[in-house]
Image (cartoon, rainbow, N blue to C red; front, side, top):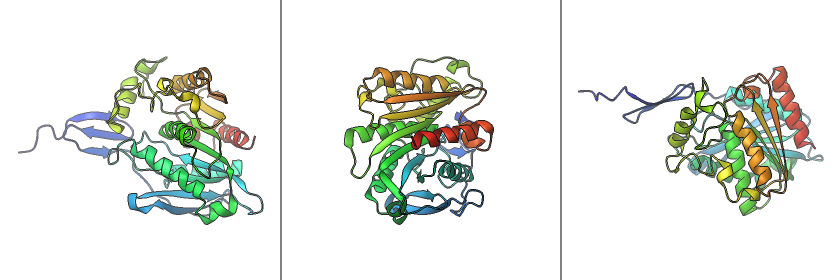
Length: 312
């Protein structure tokens, strides 16, 4: 006889994931793959690399058209979004986003394909991202050797990837890895949370606070609560040790995470951190609008802002 709980839903995380009481889960958001290529629109070239094959950690590297070993370029280590449970560095969405970013900013980019929950619960994604950053610093890859200036390294990411950016920048500050000079970090609609609600979090139509809280606990079952410093940077007593001096945060007016982005700026400034943080609040837009609509007016404006931030 079938288990009566087999189709009972424990958590629903539309449009990403559904979790059943018997432990099964199904990804509602397919993990798609497109091959590395030369992009016909931008001339950006990409290739895939294995960083740690023994754990299945890989990345996609991008170089702009007319890259020249005589003129080394800044490096962006990028972490995709997807709530720690969906998406990929190799998906059509991120292939298009990274092609556009690399062309606009004239940088080398390394888009990290960290492992996902629930197969690999947090902190695995953080560990994978740290291994990837150290691999970039090792200079083992030919494109990085030829085109990258490791004295100008930036971290970037959206949503859960923005959360990873913060946590990796914190680790840079505490461990100072060889070969990496971290100049700055940009966070697009970062996924942060906290026990106490902000603004309209509890009543947001698409992703209320209960959604954010449950997703965090599901991705990171070892956590105590949503005031864990990994998801609520304001609770980190070592926040002043963030490992770069410049931070750019984008938030969107309709995004439930908007208040968290503003709070991040506030707690950074109050922490004693010796750096500069800027926030850009985009009217009328929703969560990670620039990733989903990179050719829109607001998406293009954001790319230009990030390019300016990197090439400052």
